[in-house]
Image (cartoon, rainbow, N blue to C red; front, side, top):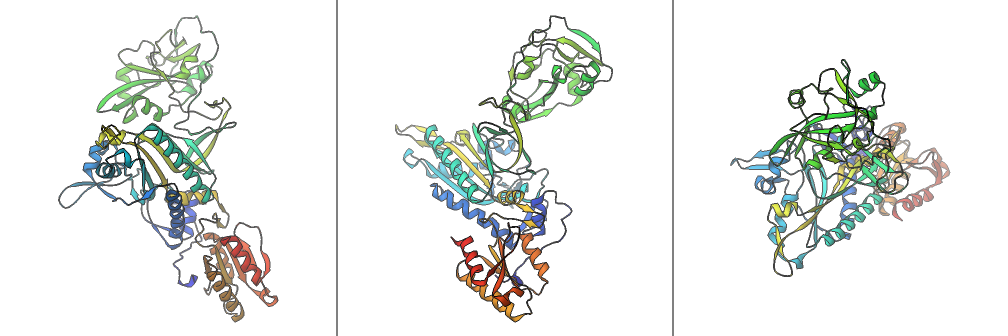
Amino acid sequence: MRISKLLMPTLREDPADAEIISHKLMIRAGLIQKAAVGIYNYLPFGYRVIRKVENIIREEMNRAGAQELLMPMVVPAELWQSSGRWDKYGKELLRLKDRKESDYCLGPTHEEVITYIAKSFIHSYKQLPINLYQIQGKFRDEIRPRFGLMRGREFIMKDAYSFHASQESLDSEYQNMHDTYCRIFERCGLKYKVVDADSGNIGGSVSQEFMVLAENGEDALLSCTKCSYSANVEAAKAQTTVGEQTPTEEPVKETATPGKRTIEEVSSFLQIAPDQLIKTLVYYYKANAKEDHVIVLLRGDHQINEVKLKNYLDADVVLLAEDTVVRKITGVEPGFCGPVGLKNVRIIADNGVQGIADGVTGANKKDTHLINVVPGRDFPLFETADLRLAAAGDKCPHCGAPLEAIRGIEVGHIFKLGTKYSQAMQAEYLDQSGASKPFIMGCYGIGVGRTAAAAIEQNFDASGIVWPKALAPYHCVVIPANIKEPAQLEAAEKIYQELLTAGVEVLLDDREERIGVKLKDMELIGITSRIVVGKALAEGKVEFRLRSAAGNELLPVAAAVRRVIQEFKE
């Protein structure tokens, strides 16, 4: 392709609203253009990258035995109502009406539609298992869209759904998809980890995320320093070592703590370690139309993991209670609450609370705390669970080695859905005995745009993008240093034609621009290699350079052509 004919709107300065490197470079390199908040146009260079990601995904999904189809982006409300998610999904679901006042939504995911397809056409165990996938646009009305393609409202996704007659069959396909995803991200040239994850709004019993490792990753991960265990911090199991301290025999006693509300203030004022404090939180939750409040107890140096709490309560929503509600339940404002003497309210203690042998907690009285508090002695421990946010230094739940904190970008997520959707939508098949059974389902997603953006977060330098070979929009650019020199232009044209004939994705920079401008543009966009035809042509040589290399190589023309072909065709 001749660059003089291309739409290539490169910028020299970072856009004001871009925060992370992939967003900055995708705008500057002319790969995308903002159309609205969280919605982008894919410009020619950017769309070539997107198509390359899609093609890798498509080849590997087909190789794995999945079948491609295409479902509508506009989905009738009845399908979402039949699964129960129409009211539960929240404001991320963009609802709309047609001219007949019928309700629809823009599909953020397609479990309902695919289950309807299976219900309509798959009737016998003989048709199972089956895996159906699509690559399609989605829409989620994110409350805070940001980071370009990393967290947009409209995005391209590969979503696959499998249907099974047994748990063993689902387990087998889940592993098949796990291995397929590994091949996809390896072919994309990405460094990644597979981590345990929370299933979120999709649901299901087991899920794992595929995380591209990057310093600016939006997800916090914990990874074992010894074994293969890794988890999103939301799903990481917190292994709390219960101390061997003998519980104090001193009775509970009130102590004045005027104006000391926070863990830091109380621990400093009483000159005790934060892990001696018992933090008391009041939460509102809604589960299956039931609304209630619950007290959650944590060790003072630990943080609540609201995802774990939501899952433990099997709730649709969990929120910290308003101050007025806290006062109604405990009799005091936040900061002085405690479990001792509380009645008529459910109390759940994090596992770490059990190890406190001489604790301090709020007295449910203003400006007052209790000392010498022993959990189980001074208040009951009817319910205990892992409710805290795991942290670096915690023990691995598999081998006991320390966990380390790393950052990642979620590009893929696989789920064991079970019968959540098939039961709700009465999607059934006939088993070998002729009995009706609900499909057992799996779900497998990849963010196409996120994968491209994550590749940039992992591969860039001061000059711009350094694409992995498989994703670069073009593999080579041929640049005549001075387009007004007939010999240089003629040689560049000949090299360009030779590479085209050899099947290399090649550009010819035939613009009437200074050589410095041309080089900066190609480095910014991340064209994987370049051949510069300049003064060395008088000696039959040209400059060759890989985008990832530190310097130029002076090669004979024929050798430079062979080098490019070897790099990208063999």
